[in-house]
Structure formats: C-alpha cells, structure tokens
Length: 383
Image (cartoon, rainbow, N blue to C red):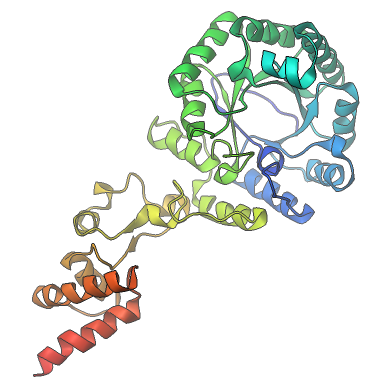
C-alpha cells in the first residue's frame, strides 16, 4: 500500500524488524518477522521498517514476502545513501525507502572519512533516484543530535529539494534530553517546511521522553520498537509512546492498545529478550498492588493508583499478598476464593502472612495463604 499522509496527523513508524533486530544477539526467524509485521499492521501502526534488502538472502526474501502481504501499513526498507541499495529495495516491492547517511562531523571524519559535501552529494543522488521510481523517501540524518545545527538544516533543505518526503532525526547515541530535543526540532521546523520523524535511542533512559518532546516541537512521525528493543539500550517503546500520547497528551492515534501485552510477549519470545515484570505499560507489576495503603485505595477506586484500566493494554489487576499487605488485601483475596474473612480474623492472620513472606523473600501463593489460615486461625476458632 502506497503511503499517503494527512496534514495535522501524527504517524508511527515501527522499526522492530530493522533496528530492533539489530540488537546485539537478536535474530528473528523469517516466520517471526512476518508474524510481527502482521500483528503491527493489525493494531494500526502506519509504517513498518522491515529490514535491509542489500543484506540479500533470507533478509531480502522475507522483506519481499512482507511487501506482498497486502497490509494496510506502508512497508519501508532501510538503505545506505547508495543507489544500488535502493535498487535492492525496489526489487522487494516496498512502497517506501529510508536512505541513511551520517551527518555529524565525528561520523563524517572518523567513520566515513570524507567531507560534508560528499555527504550532501551522495544523499541527493540516492534520493533523486528513489523519487524517480515513485517511492516514498525518508532521509535519515544519522547522529543528527551531534550534528552542527546549521549543517543539519542545510542537509534537510538539500533532502527536500531532491524530493525527500521527510527527515528522520536520529538521536543515534541517545545523548539528548527533552529540553534540547524540543529546541533543535523547533529550530529545524522554523527553518524548513519538512516532515520530521523522531528516531530516539535510550542510552540515558530518555528515548520516549525525547520522542514526545520532538512531537511537541512539531515532529509528525515517531519511530518506535516493541518493548523498546534496539541497539545498545534500545529505542523509544511503541507501547510507551502510544499510551503517553493517549493519557498524558490526550491524543489518541487509533492504535488497538488491548493487544499490547500479547504483542510484547510475542516479540519478547521471538527476540529471546525477557519482558521484565516492571516494564512500563505492559509489565505485570504495572497493575500489581501489595502495599496496604495502595491496595485499600485501589479496591475502593482503581484510579487512585492506576492511570488507566489494565484491560486497556491486555493485562489484569493483581492483589499481591506479602510483607506489605494490609487487612483489606486479605479480605479481598478471600473473596476471590468465595470465602468471607472477618476483619478480626484478617488482623490475626496478618502477622503470620508478613512473617512467612519475609522468611521466603517473596509474596505468598494462594495455597500458602490458605495453609496459614488453616494452621493459625481455623485452629483458634475450633478451640
């Protein structure tokens, strides 16, 4: 499907299958890449960056298969600023190409060992070739966050003149903070009328914050990966960006968030990377309550300690019984068993619960709680 942009709309570009798979040690099976692409399309992601055709072999073959699936999402392939790379992408049948080249002096001098003009010339020729072939073009300014701002603006202007549809601003080493991000994106937007995609890395834990700061400054595309998968510390996480937009900025971009946990679990398994229980948005601990004060509040009104309902992301609320539990949690837990626990019995049971939890260094399983009750409370009642 050829990508069509609407003015005033924010778009998601998921690069789980390209930048996500570039995580050290991660390899998706061909069937997994196809399944992930389908899942992302089903939840409503606008554009999928699915790989690097010039790698050839299984990579190119799988990209071609994804391009032929007839998905609603635009299918993009990644390329160096090399015409032969772009030809490989076109052979796969994708409707969009990302043309990437370094723009920072440290990259130009030490990685490319060339000049700024060489960068502009190679980017321009690759973009012009791609546009003649009728595909959508994103020009990626690699290491944009460490690029001289005047040169970056010149680069963006040259890209637009060559026919590029957008500029991908890459915080390649995750060096920005949200305040700097806002300022630099605002300056680019004031200097040139071009669509901007935020592509942020998480080296300092600010990928999602930086992506959102760029959006606030005028960027209308955000690059993401499922679970924040990506090189080194990863990228801005799809689930974090979408839910922050929805609940912090009150901007619903139409993604089916109810499938987030399912998607996160699948990508976790396929990538061989654990999905931590404390992972923002989709971790099981997000809706797990143990502290007595929190449990009491959550039982009276979940929104006292939950900003959105767990089923909104495919999770369930959990009341955990352990060291920090209070009587309200015990009474509620027994209700789950279909049993009534009077408050006086809950108070008597609580010290035993806390003691065993400390001894085991974890919360209690349901059966352990029942054993405690039978051992200490039911015996007292029987006397």
